[in-house]
Length: 539
Ligand code: BGC
Image (cartoon, rainbow, N blue to C red; front, side):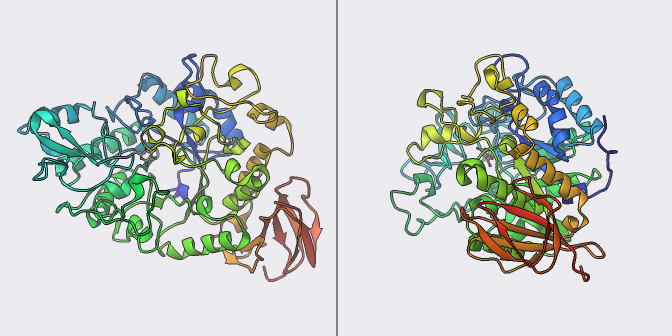
């Protein structure tokens, strides 16, 4: 049954809850141990029940899969491991029929070294596509042209012996960087966007937006101050001449103008949210870039009242007046929130996440509290762990399969899963948590529903309140509507909090205090969060 009519409002994404799916790990329907598009379609009931507005799929395109599908060999196709173009069209139709939008991952910085463009480019210095990638002559000593480091270890330059030049790769050597100074590259990648938008996709999460263009003079990057042996080798330089170059923002603005050729589309993307940088990822009102540069600030903040309060304030202060905030609480490159905070504080984090002003992104599996799953050395897939071992950089533990039930293969696969599912703790699956009225899954569903239903939570602003070292407190206020107060105890001991006025509990992270009337002060239990509708006359 359709949950709501497909809302055609141009800026649908402003209040949206976006759910990230790592396709290999969502659901497998053909028994090969890897998730697929039909598997995603078969679980849309779950997403509709949960109330998400949009799904973002990590790459689904043909790929040698050396970097989790972010090494693409055909931007216009569907990898046969995931299904066919018919499967994709079917999934898109099924999403739209339920009022759920679909976003794709767009990876503009690089291709796979198996992409026909690169095969042509490397075939000869004279090939018309030679300049589609970043080729340079060796340094005087025959070594790489400069000191730039690849993110996955070693030099960012790889020698192509037959043609005697090096090509640049910000990531794996099997992921050569496209040359975004070449207008033909911009045109070709714009056509990729148009191809998928014509098929009906609602937008994109753009990968690695800050590294599209490097310094033309190839100036060496400086050493990072204080970067000792504890710092992974690829991070021992400050990436001044490869990252967030002014020209990269021009490219983003050009891409945005392509997005805007189609109504109601979204361009979110990876970004640097640091001071002085975040604004550039939004672009100028006259030349906008990303509508939503993704903000992982909550995930990176130290988990205590003062640090989290400061992280919220600092971030919101950096969002320009014409921008709109975003909050991402997990992802395929980040340690799972339930692992980082533990299962109870992860509930407080969910409440915080879904009551802040802005667009929310969360990651499949976080709604049931999946932790990091240990991956034995012989099953490691992520090149980061293989190439820069010993620093805990591997991303496999957060990419393990979804747990649908407690049956064999956790309802994910009937075959051998591509990554271990891990020991399925009782209750750590969707079926069990749907039955349990106080589960993490039920909390997510209630929070998403509350966020939609409560007008105060639609307000574009936040009114910070003075918390304590252990608590976070803020108010959301929509003109003419009762205000909503959010109180969170980020500690493991009870906290007494004074209330500004009387109110009624709309939701507790513990799912057991709804409708309690409060006045004066209240005790927040360990890791408890409350959303309270205030009754003060002026609200
Ligand atoms: C993606 C990573 C990927 C890298 C290279 C990142 O931003 O999120 O998973 O390894 O880009 O494409």
